[in-house]
Length: 621
Ligand code: ASP
Image (cartoon, rainbow, N blue to C red; front, side, top):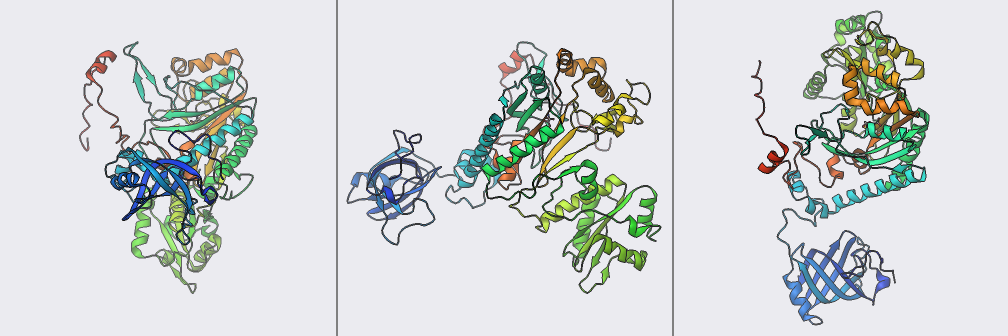
């Protein structure tokens, strides 16, 4: 007999609905759960009783248990019931090999209805039937009753458990940081919460616990982690939600290598604990510099489960190809690069127009192509402008074979990379080039520290305002092109590389982190470049600047998106699929009906009045 799991047995049940086996035949058992399905055979009623652990067949025979039969007659799908009876082997030929409990049934003597249920807005017992997402979110508790959603939440729970175990085994301390804080900028808008005790003042919900975790390092908690809820008020996409969860951590007395090595081991363990059947593409995780990934994949979060690398066509086009668009782009210091879409030579006019339109939307002026038809013929509207030799050289350089399509962009370097990078990602998906079971982790580092913000006349940290600088580049930060308090696009800092590293999985940025600046003077210099005034710095980052005067250890850390990671491990393309109660595209919760208008007393207590939104500027004005 299998042991009833002591932790799951309750006054209502001796076993879960996934537990009983042939070896239990003859024993008495009690089960409680939902009616998954009911089949009436006159004096015999068969019910599938379901809980999150499985399904057990329950039989009620009118001859043996007339009262139970009468009650069972009343139940409908999704009623909650409790039954008592004897476990029996099913008759030969009626076993259900698809259920772990399929060899037995519970012959019921007592039957109780614990709770009735209305007809549900969608079937719970048809997990594959498509259901409108709005309905799923409105009745999320019913959606979670369905197997796929429940399975994903369990996977997420296993993943977080594995994360905690690895961290504890490696000497990390789990610390909770507050969520009513002051703005910690991570490049998004803050959600703010008005204070009742201090009218006119607000808290900000953390975009991340960045400053607090750095303060924990100054406090001597040399290895911190937290499964941290973060809030960023920005437009929603498939991989974004206004509130989301990060694995946030920070370590003292480390360099880049220490953090990356720990994260890599941790990610491998978590992947194996969560989805042991999925192969890891490459160990150790491949590392690319930012310049490398942009050059080769046109993206700082490439999906490397397939190749389709960007090819530099310049050698095929110099000194001059004869095609003005290419020659001009190269003469202006731009790039002419290509990707090869395997097997797409037969693309129709309409499809190529669509691709061109997409390339334009991504910022290109146009998209050139060259199809290599079976038999070796070229088909290309630009062929007439290119010498035979240039055409052959393009094909050779790109490695295109018969039946392939070469897509070419000629533009400023950044545009060429970005457009081809996006097309690469889209085509990889469309052509099914990536093995969905493979987990391809990789690192990207050596990002530029800043990018120039033309509009605001200052440098912007490309990642985190606290990021450290690659030691050889520190000098670039210290030297200013003019007044150190007045950033200029000529500042040598524009060439400095950050001690920043991003972890990428299957084309998604899982997260990133850095070794931080831990010296007040250098941090202040970095803030000046980022356009902060002395007062502004004090206001935004005063606690960290002050703390750095009391002995700050060298430190670094990272944050990984738990929702993204869980979605990727669950082979989902939207993080909503791994969140119990996510928000819709417009940031609302259709189940709780949030956000909603505050009660009049709440306005009053907070000393607030809604004055309406400023009028929208007239179109064209
Ligand atoms: N605070 C950063 C973020 O939320 C991560 C880090 O640098 O640790 O992206």
